[in-house]
Length: 388
Image (cartoon, rainbow, N blue to C red; front, side, top):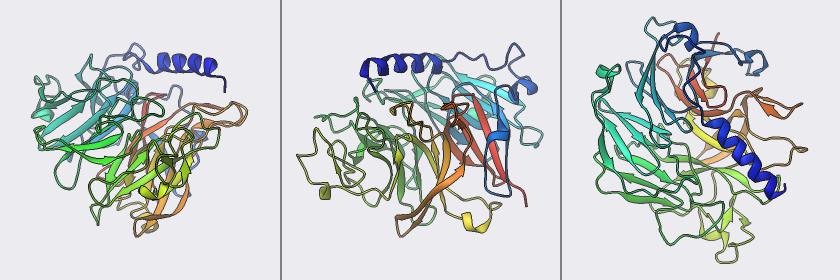
């Protein structure tokens, strides 16, 4: 693809993702019909395994990262519009009927996490905490700044955050480029800290841009997705699903991709054997984001502990070869290694026109065992459930 043409696409893509909160189409903010509008939604095109069904749980502009509380409040981060939302289903019909704006005018508040009654929000360079938030959804408290020393670079600067099985808050820092070396070890890393922002440390190195991670429900090991570099062709390199078995491991960026592919610019510096290989190579340019182990008690037993991945979809492929991603995939793992990689939900991309109507971002399992999936293109939270 011509790089000048790419810049045009990038500008257009940036403009289209910077949405104001207009998803209600003139109806009041809390209107139930606006919250579950079907405008622009093509559920009949979605293909799922037999017995599964998909429906609209809520409509939220530029819906990105998700955090769900035990009482059912769903917090939603926002990359393009600067807003953090909360939605609730108060009558138990699994359709949202209340929507709240928690914060506005933030710089890409993509990351949200919930712990001990407090909502944590990640901007590009700052972390905020909103205490006792569920009791104050209609009048959020002044946030507490817990950390403000992350790089300010916009390139791969938006963050996914989550609390690990050790109680620490994990925060990634993407590479400030497509491919480059950096003297600052914080770039291309995953960091962690105490909930109050103290004792920040780099937990993993060589991570180009992760926007999703989770922990194995039995081993407690951290797994994360990583977006592969651009401009190596339509089909290289693969994106990655990785497993961290101990702190301080290096996962190859910018020297090695997919476990054994030397980078054309930096690959001569170190052998690929110096780095941790991916647990599973994914498709090229699929942009894997959210990732979760299946903990649903209502999905069939064969899905237990399958790894579900939200593949946001490609941009760095020539139009004639078509997009990759735009779907939800599954990885089966044994002893920390992927043994199968397959589709779970497809149809968000029209392959004949090479255009998508939805782009999966994050996913989370709800208390009834259903899966909630965010989409930042149509501005939707989908609910996928299994009907016996």
